[in-house]
Amino acid sequence: MRIARALSEAEAKQVQTLILLGGVFTTLAIWTKFEDPINLPKMFVLVLFGAAVLGLALPAFLSAYRLTSGYQRIALGLVGIFVIGLLITTIATDVKYTAFFGEYHRNNGAFSYFAMASLLGAGILVFNLKSSERFMKFLAGSGLFVASYGFLQGAGKDPVGWVINYNPYITTLGNPNFTSGFLGLAAVAILYLSIDAKNIKFQLIYTVGLVCNLYILWRSGSIQGLFGFAIGATLIAIVKLWTIKKRYGQIGLLLAAIAGTPVVLAILNIGPLASKLYQGTLQNRFDYWSAALGMFKDHPIFGVGIDRFGEYYRQYAVQNQYVQGQITDNAHSVYMQLLATGGLILFLPYLFLVLFITFIGLKTLFKAHGKDKLKISGLMGIWLGTISVNIVTIDNLGVGVWFWITGGVVVSISLRNSQLVSGSDSKVTTKANKRAVKHSDNAFPISYVSSFLLSVLVLILLVPALGKSSTLFNLKNNAGSYNTQTYLAALDSESKNAQNDPQYLIQLANLALKQNAANEAFVMINQINKIDSRSYNGNYFGAAVNEAFNKRAEAVKYREALLVLDPWNTTSQIELIRNYLAIGDKASAQEVAALIKRNYPGSQADIDASALLVG
Image 1 (cartoon, rainbow, N blue to C red):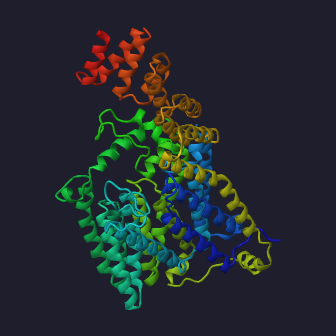
Image 2 (tube, rainbow, N blue to C red):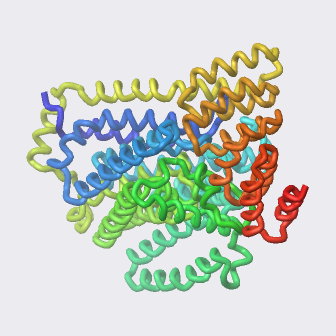
Image 3 (cartoon, helix red, strand yellow):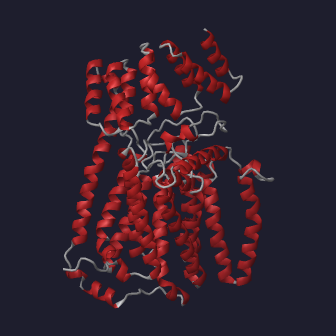
């Protein structure tokens, strides 16, 4: 019985299909009967496919060192180091539920990253240059589907019926920015397919699809996707010109450099194109990145904890933000997010992995000839566009999954450097590889068993989260169907079944407070603060409820916690002054008033604080 072996061609194709379907369904997954209809379904689909892929590719993973090339080994090693770093930082994170499942309505926790890393690792082992065209078609098809949905939303015919108070083009990704980012990358794949198509009918179909894709991208109002598409399309155009004649390629490269400079400056609000391309949200991102750097400075090794950016942001936010009082739970940059939340132990493996894939991808591109060169330019266009957009975007699962899949495909084609130079794509196998493939048909199906067991494990871990989201949806949207006693009993029952989930408890406590059930809410609030002493909502609820019942002595500890967690919040500080005065601690009240005066001299908060002391 051979467990560690190369996959047969049929097995490799199965894994390829699962990887690509994992990308497609993660992008498209929504479920409107969940309280989180966007990201929780995506996490579930992603982790389930990641587990299935890991199981099916297990024999190849176990024999990877023996059967892969040097570049593949290095890339797999970096993926392994990233996974180890992720495991360490997850264990080091203070709130384990958030570390594994991710922030509420984000789900960028360890489960999601483990799954995406498995897709990349398996992709390295099962793809080749020929099968990379399947990747292009799956990505392009997903883009066309999302664009089609965008047309329905724009026409007011959305079958889902989202209630949207801003730009309607949220598609299946939940936000116009994510729609833009994904469509920009998918457009690169569509562009390549339109150029590569031999049949004029397919050329026309792809061209029309590209126009539709770019139209919805433009209507999204976000330039993220436009920026990513411009990078990918430029690379494809330069390579196409280069394959026609080297001089044409050189001229194209020069023109791209000349034209690209004012565009980059415009994005930074510099130059004549700034009025067209600059978006004020970039200033918000500068505030977020400043906070991320502050977190990293104080927690350089392990970071503040996986997906814990939101509970630290207020503490590290700059005093005077571009939008004063703006809060966020993400750094709005994949790189800064990982640096702040995972520290060097997570950020460095990720950075080295990105740089290494970029290096070997470009090296493979330079060595290739003819049609191979054009195909690799399409892959690298998607890759370069993705890593560029990641500078200014959240790692949305529906978009981010394609970063990991693309990385695996790019590494996989590096094995064939020598073949690419001669324009072929024959399969490279070692003697050990051939022997493994020869006996694979008679091998015990450990891959199917492991895939099944890992999938069952995912169901055990994640189905309860889906159940809670479904219950919360019902509690929020059908409260009128309960009498008060039954409703509070349901909230109490749910809270007892979620003692380690502060995010769920926050939502339940909020619903209890809306029913004026302070005692029931306080039980949940105490549990929230026991799990997560840094919880802003837990401390805010604790303070507000006590103050509402004039229990100012009990409210002090919560307001003191908020003084650390949210140091620029003068509203909370004014309440803390009132609490101190109520219990006769004037000296502490004066210290808080002095803090307000130091931070905001002459402000209304300064005036109000002084009036309280005099009164």
